[in-house]
Length: 142
Image (cartoon, rainbow, N blue to C red; front, side, top):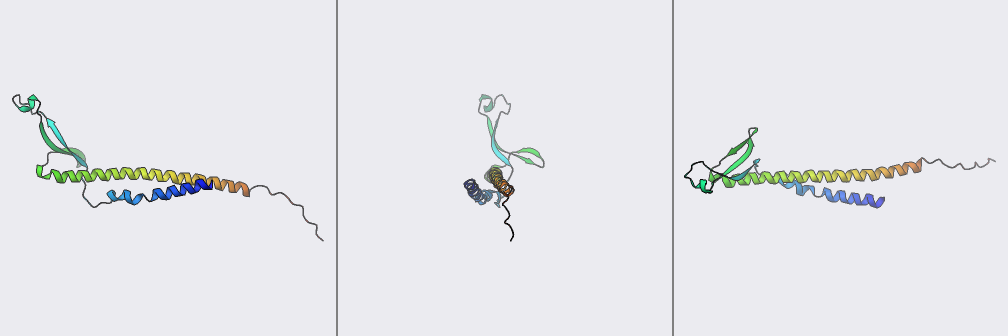
């Protein structure tokens, strides 16, 4: 039982040491933009256009939730690199948050297991203390 307790404590301390690394992307000072850039391919509908033969028109668009609703915007080509950085930083931040949630669940599971082992030890101690004492004969007084 004590070996299990020691092992759980070691796992808990090892898991606790992962926190600073997980917080790096969450605590970054860089601006983020919740959205994504992607290439949109479509037909314009003109029968004589090249897109009618399969060469679709391409444009890079930004899709994000702005002002409470989804928006799709065609940014200027000179802004694409900056927008890609903003959306990439957002994605890294969200991935770090997901890792932090998994870490938190793991930490709580270890704490719960540690508590269960400690409760078992406490109950064993309680049983030991609450055993009826055997009566010893009283020595006669002289």
